[in-house]
Amino acid sequence: MKRPRNPSKLSESIHQHLNMYALAASTAGVGLLALSQPAEGRIVYTPTHHVIGKNGRYKLDLNHDKITDITLVDTYGCNTDYCYGRLSAIPAGGNAVEGKKGFLSIPSAYALKRGALVGPKQPFSGQLMASDNMGYVGQWLNVTNRYLGFKFEIKGKTHYGWARLTVTDKNTVIAATLTGYAYETVANKPIITGKTKGGDEATPETGTLGALARGAK
Image (cartoon, rainbow, N blue to C red; front, top):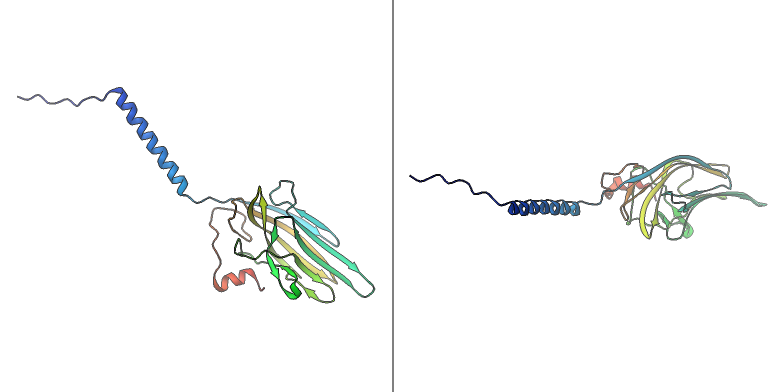
């Protein structure tokens, strides 16, 4: 009669090698999984309430690094013939405001609606927001909760963001109320106006809905 075979026992060194192999394979798998995942964005949102009145200005530090990124400037004055009011968004060097040159080649800043995409496919040559000077110029005259889109640099890399403002014009006296601003922490990643939390991927606007979100240009 044949004796039943006892299962052979693996040596302690082989057990150690197998354990090391399993650990290495697991670590490699986690690393590959991490590499395959897209960079998760985080939106930094700052609520505020600041009124920029006649001849006032506000230095906007989007990422709180004590460096001014955009300066909102309200200008008012009179001469012998008329008075004038003007509101502008002046970007620091290397930064820019969403918009483009319009009437008389004036660099007009877009007054975006909630849900508009701010990213690399948009034009960034805006500056003038509103002007009342024997005539009206700019998209920001008497608007409520519109968004200023911008791009700015953090350590040499481009980031996108928005600022929410309400603007009034009373007898050429223009006033702006800043109620919040936000930016995307992932470089070169678009941001959606009005969005205050990350997690969802920003998707480009298409067709009529995208045009409506951006407002008339």
